[in-house]
Structures are given as structure tokens and as C-alpha cells.
Amino acid sequence: MSTIALQTLPGGSDAAKRLAVRLGLSCGEIAVHRFPDSELRVAVAPATDTTILYAPLDQPNDKLIALLFAAEALRRNGAKRLVLVAPYLCYMRQDAAFHAGEAISQRAMGALLATTVDRVVTVDAHLHRTTDIRLVFPGIEAENLSAMPAIANALATESIDPATIVIGPDMESEPWVNDIASRLRLQHTVARKTRHGDRSVAISFADPGLLAGRPALLVDDIVSSGTTLMAAAKALIAMGAAAVDAVVTHALFPPAMIVAFTGAGIRSIRSTDSVPHPTNAIALDDILAAALRSELTTTYLSETTP
Ligand SMILES: O=P(O)(O)OC[C@H]1O[C@@H](O)[C@H](O)[C@@H]1O
Image 1 (cartoon, rainbow, N blue to C red):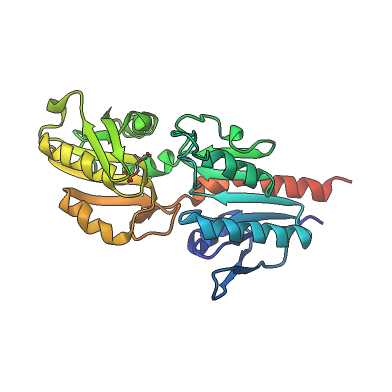
Image 2: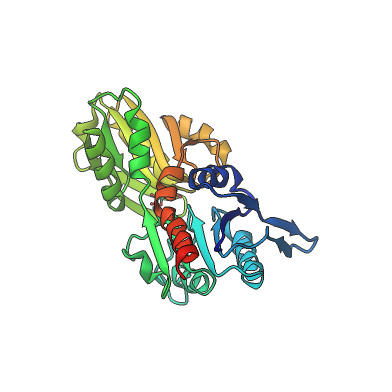
């Protein structure tokens, strides 16, 4: 009889438990001990034939090591199929050597994980130039799900001012804002963004008159330093926006920064639970469970196939 269960790295447990409940699976916790010299000791729960590894990979360096060690333990203890669920997938932004000598982190990370697991499921991975996630993970299955249906469903339960404009802070955000706007029947536009450094961006809009007196809903995939979001909010307010709210997939910023966002004129900020964060308001378990149901079918078939 084939077996399947979910195990989570520390930090993912609430969202992982919700996902496990949706799938009707047990949720084991992977124990990670840090030695005084910063090395890690990792202990997994009992392995199952198919093990779904839940790992939100924000602050990734330790988590990637813990993930490799967990995979080693699971394989050695009998896991035949490892499915990595990384709702936030790290190191996707450095997808080229922008300056001589730079590592292509996306390629190195993808190659490493492709030798570790059999399938990767993630959400709104930052694939601006590498459009097909299977190119990141050679030889294994990989899917990049969109959080936009979950975000739009959450927003649809509220009474949104029909004059609201959905705003993307750069050209790359166009598919997301287009999707949210069409689901909510709202107008949308995207800004032009020029990045001058990690914490320095310039934002401008082609039609500054569009926002006057209207609420703006900023949508982005990642908020890291918060520079993009704050620059966009300031530009919107300078153009006369009536209010600025923000919704993002991956909240990577320190929670204390919410005060700075308020100072920049952002009335509210919400995120999905891809990374545990005080702004979490939109659960991804529904879309993740839909993608993972095939694992249950595979397990069932292997039980019934002679
Ligand atoms: O400006 P911060 O928050 O540092 O970085 C996040 C932004 O940088 C882009 O890659 C993301 O798509 C997002 O727009």
C-alpha cells in the first residue's frame, strides 16, 4: 500500500496544516536544531512513499540547507517521491549575470533542487525573463501557480468602489493587474519603474490625470525592501489618488515597515500566506490543494495497480 503525507519546515506550520487538512493528509514537523557554530541538525517525521515537503523559502540560506538535509533523510528512510511546495520560491530574481562575474542564482538554485526533489509547486515565482518554470528545474516536474484568483476572490467579498484603479508598479506586473482587474471588472494601468539600486527606484505614470480623486489598488508579486511600493504610493498620492491600498503575494519585508508604508500614504496592505507575516489575509491552500490532488490520485492508482 502506498502512503502519502505532508511535512513542513519550521515556520510553515500554520499554512502547511491548513493545506494538509484540505488534502486529508497528516502534517509532520521537521525539527531543525542550530548548533552553537550555526550548523544545522535536521530530523524528519517518518517517511511516506510520497512526501510533500512544505517550505516557505523566505530568508532562504538556512532553509535551503535544512531542505537538502530533510530530503536526504526522507530518501534514506524510504520516500520514493518528494514534492516540494515552496509557496515563495527564493533566488528567482537573479536570472542573468547582470555584471561580469555574477552567479546566475536562479540557475544554480534550480539545478540543486532538481537533483533533490521530483516536483516543485510554487506561486507567483519571479520569472520575468524565464517564462517557463520547467527551464529552471531541468528534468523534473514544476508548476508556477498564480495567486491572483485567490486574491481576487478575497477582494470580491468586499464592497469595492467601482472607480478603483488596479495599479501595477512596473511593466512586469501587467499580467497580474490585468487578471485582478478583469476578475473584479475594474480599470487597470501599470507604471514605468527604473531601479537605481536596492533601495532606490523612480516611478512614473503615462497618464497622471487618470488617478485624480479615484481609489488605487496596488498589486505586486514581492515586497522586499518596500521601496517599489512606497515610491508607487507616493506617486499615486501626488497624482491625487483618493486612497491607496496594497495587496501582494509575497510579504518579505520586516513587519516594522508597516509604519513606513502608512507614512508613504498606504492605507492598508495585505498579503497571501506564502510567507508567515502579520499582513497575511489571503490563504493559498485552495490553489495549492488543487495542484496537489494529482498526488493523491497517483498514490491511489499505485495502490490498486497490480
Ligand atoms: O522594491 P522592493 O520591495 O525591494 O522589491 C520588490 C519589487 O522588485 C521587483 O523585483 C518585484 O517585482 C517588486 O516589484
